Image (cartoon, rainbow, N blue to C red):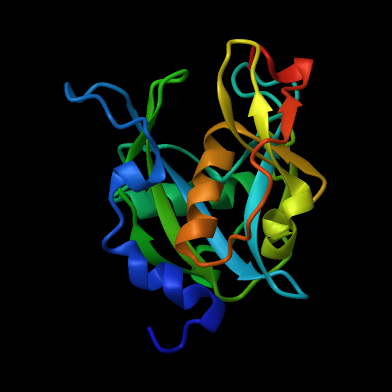
Length: 214
């Protein structure tokens, strides 16, 4: 895709060959169980460099309250593809115009054991960025186009320690605390896109208590 920005080309070129095991150690159950869903990983111009669109869920949601995520959700019967589901959810959540986005690839589905979602990550170029905002504040508290420069800054990277013993990647960027599924996927995308920088993987941060049961 010759008209893609140079900074996105490497990730776009690799997308077709990405295996699910490169994205997560949690793969969809062999028995086909799990709720089918999709997330939109929209990369665009953040003003002073590339960025990725992230949302912060409302603090009083029943599940995943306050957590940072990619726009997305469950696939509906009316969705004819994972891409369609991801774009529909992004429009419903933050007012993203589907016409402003070019889907580059539907990556292999991975699994979130705690919620039993089978998630298809949809890679996209937000070719025509425009203002977005939480459409329904009962679901979305914030939306940010987070600069990749902040995500790859070694000072903003750490491992998050959960009381259960779980340990995974974390970021403090765009005014957001990113952990869990979203942080794990971002960690892999930064590597695959050629953006990642060396960082101290011995740095630990305890998961804030407000997330313990979310």
